[in-house]
Length: 73
Image (cartoon, rainbow, N blue to C red; front, side, top):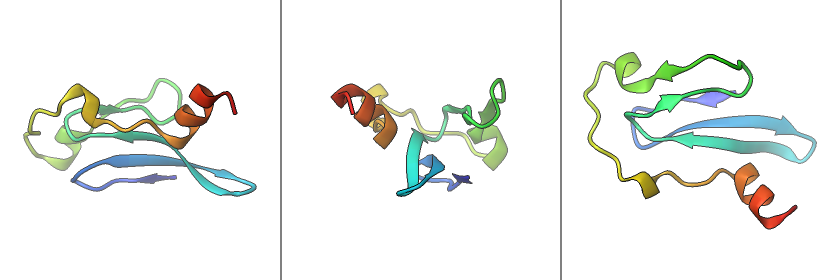
């Protein structure tokens, strides 16, 4: 499942026994590569028909899954 909004982020979720888990967040102007479809990439700016504002590299938040991996959970 993916939630696509023009701003500020597109988020990908995965169903788990505990509920939905956010697995990625993508800022406008970046490429969305959903884990459910390996090899698929979506240019979000082109899809929305907008020219994205530059996003700082650190503006993308780690997903809950990435955070769990970093914490060793």
